[in-house]
Amino acid sequence: MRICFGRSPGAVVIVAMVCCAPAVVHADESARGRFDEQAAGALSGIHGILAVGVAAEPEFEGAAEYLPIPQAYAHITAFGLGLEIEGPEARLNLRPHSAFQFGPAVEYRMGRDDVANDVIDRLEAIDGAFEAGGFVTYQFKSLMAQSDVLEISAELMADVSGVHEGVIGKVRAGYWVAPRERLRVGLETEVGFATDDYMSTYFGVSEAGSVRSGLATYTAEGGLKDIGVQASMTYQLTDRWGLVGRASYTRLLGDAANSPIVQDEGSADQFRGGVGLSFKF
Image 1 (cartoon, rainbow, N blue to C red):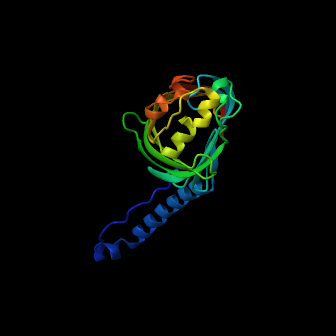
Image 2: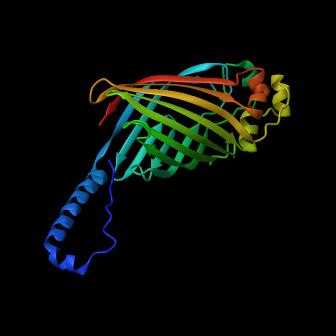
Image 3: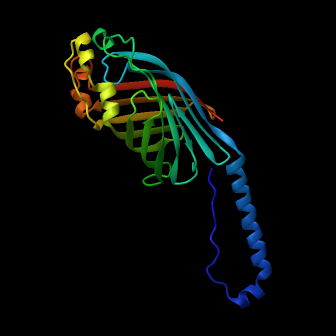
């Protein structure tokens, strides 16, 4: 669904205007009618995809233990706006029908408390955090195939709940293509960074925490945090129902990887995966 804006000629000769006025008026009315139909379809229709399933992911960032969790996804377009919900993150796309897209975003970040690892459980508990920010995206379509999309995006989020009081960001590049009529596959890469406050909250070890846990004290500073890759797949069983799958690998870097939380009790290699059932409307 997209809104198309036509371009009128830069100059028109007076004689042509006089002689061809009826034809020009008729053509203009036809063009306006087509535009009105396209605009009405783009702004009044509600459509999208919903998906629910189950996923496995690390118990906390840097953990070696994994937990099964329910997973939900929604991508809904209505009245010229796009709502994207993926797990604990939600985005409002203000320009879903354009190559250049942007909008606000919110996310809930799980805390770290009562975890399976006894050593990490002795550290200070971390509450769940609410983050708010925004994103920008640019899409290139039909580069190597009629169905493909190359997307470059960046996201910046800040804690608004007073938990870590930091800022985190991501830069992504993704490519999606439909090799068959009902099958669509994608591959994404991502680089993440964070400020000192975020890193010290999730990867630092205070003196009190060191005494309780036996881990060495550690001060984590901001900078490059991780790099990752993700593969995804959707397969339409019918026009409405489909299967979705996703698998990702993230490697913690810098002070995050060097933290004793990760080196001694966790893992810098973080895997995630999930499958689900989708419904298009």
